[in-house]
Length: 622
Figure 1 (cartoon, rainbow, N blue to C red):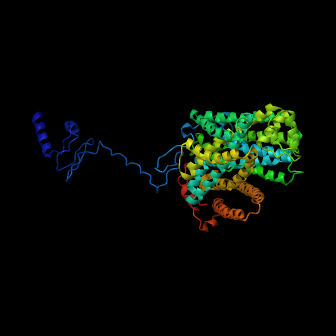
Figure 2: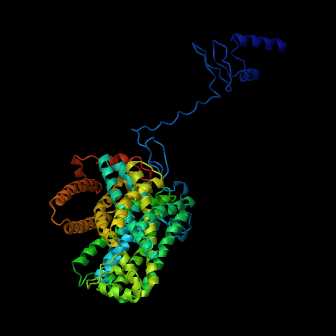
Figure 3: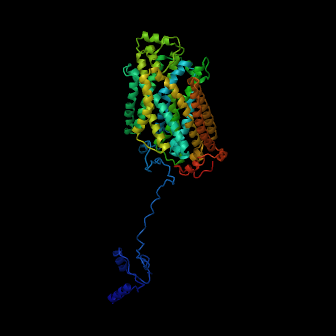
């Protein structure tokens, strides 16, 4: 009986006429034939909840959907009109291929700490970028500016050196905050906020500053090699050697970020020991040092000394250094979507920058004080006589006259050797060599960051070195080969003037972006910082322009074509500054400038919508 009923149900199921079939056999048989479509039916209802047959087919067959979940649609691909998410690796090459910047695969992990106020472990983890940044305050150009300050004005300009360093710290703090908050360095933000023409012009100006600094470093290194070899290797030979040694030292980055930072720290330590040794041997008047630091004024200073005072500011605050610092802070693992972590990173980066610039300031004070004690109001004949008494073969660099010594890196080293013993000359040369090598390597990094950021273009590091070093070496080599060492050292004044002209193109963008709420969120500059930074920027730019105008007035000698060229360059120069200033005023909150028909005033609005930090939500219009 049971068998007949079962056969009857099977027949009805095949005819599609049994609407009440609930046996598990049906479900099992369907599962076995899941790959083929079910037979046509006239009804589609079943009393069970475990299985629902598909609807009757029309022109196409259907498959059961209970055991199949369609895959999610693929993510949309980026096109040139779709803004990419701005992350640590957001810079794209021309074929839209992502690449990493500055050791993004070797980020330094920040350890947790029980104490929220301060942790030495965390400070140690954040230590590194500030010291690499401080090397720009110790390059050969700065060292020469220091010794000239002591020679021309004794201890009277130490207070200007101190306040110039503090001003540099203020601007470096803004630069580091920009990189920490946004995850992008200054050149990358310029790429996203400025139109093509101003951006490319900015890049050219930064490259001019980098090449000028690189030329000073080549000069310093070649002079150091010349002294260390006791004139065996000529200056032009030292220039060529700088090509090889830079490639050699840059190979250290293969061994990891921490080891590279340790090597830079070693070079700074060498400078501290060598210049500190000279300070100990020269024994400057300590009371005069303190008075020079904390009592403003320059009693007895002539116009040349005042001119040197202006040169100190131009030498200390390097325009490309702001681009460098904003990139170096990206080497630490910081969650930029976490407001507390960003605030903590800003705090430790600032502390580290203070310590690093304090170390560089002390080294600069060593140099100024040594030559304030030894070369202030000393004539060439006096130093020449000392060299002859000490049988120093370098003494012929000083002419036989009663004029005051016009000091430079080479004359300073010879003076130390003739006055305090030959060892002091070689120790001085070692310090200059360390300054030149460290500055050369950091200059190569900032050149790479500028090219990647401004042009969205990545070159291999050796290609970048080859470009900048070739441009820096060619004029230096020809002058060294066809002229004498006095012409080489005299180039520093021209290079300082050139780099002073580039300073607005680092200060204005830094102040613009760090004052924008759309870019920085709640980490934007406060009212006091805006006023202070703006006033300091105006002061520094005005001082440097005065420095350049006086330099050109002495060099042009009334040639009409030279004045015409200067006027043409000045029109272009101030037009670019005006454009950047209008963007700055808009970022400071004076939105009426938006009525000026200038391109780029709204680009920060478009850029801010895809910034990496998301703890602020949407920002009001600025």
